[in-house]
Image (cartoon, rainbow, N blue to C red; front, side, top):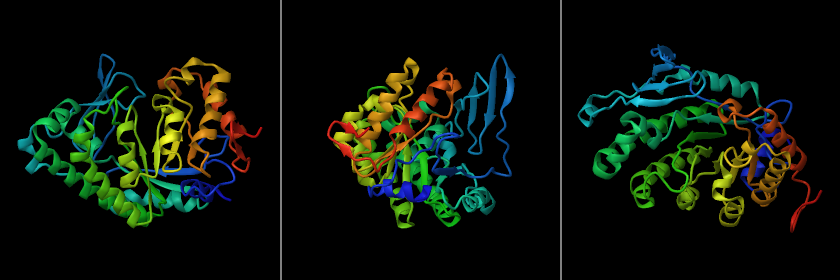
Length: 338
């Protein structure tokens, strides 16, 4: 099997010869992801403002700030500060053919890899920047009709992006929406289902109609809506903190229904800098989440600097993923054959 076949076998729970992996060299990497090319009419370069502060304005018109040179920062001023501005607001040009040239080129150069087109957001993640997070969460409670209109307009815009990626050779599309705090959703499950689930249904349905899988990244506790995410058609949940939900819980309630793509937990496991603990957690995810003729993709967290970790500790995880990742080994009660 080549990398693409390994990933698809896992997604379909058809028993790949090993688990899929997205690890740095010299380890296996089965997935190639590409986002939109730059908007030729907008510069999004960071500018230093003094006092350790950096700022930039994105193509949506949002102002971002950060206090170091490596994080992505956070929106400090949304493009739509007041709802009265919405009727005159112009969405950025996401349909320009030139913006998909990087995807076409890279996908063509990697025919054996599984190809993922990275969306520039999803309705919630885009809307919460346009209004700024604190304002938008208030809007969810007080301005539901306006919120619903904005979310639908964004979903319609993203349908075009999904179509463009499908034509560019993608096998899947992926988006990031951080929906949870440490112990709950950012909004009530009821509000999520009322306001945000329709966009998931629309966009996942569009992707599946075009033959694409759908990958979702989300940080925090989102356990209450995982059944909804599976229902609407999310094929892969990318969690950097799987221990927050509990590997046993994820396997028991959702194993065989959705794939999980995870590094060794970046919050509870990697920071402890314990080789045995890291290896055992990697093995546990393979054994429990991947015990359904597929269902688990081994990941790597992209910023050791943000974690304050020497790369050595993720290298321990990589070696464990490779050591235990051969899916032709039979799963037996109590663990993988050694």
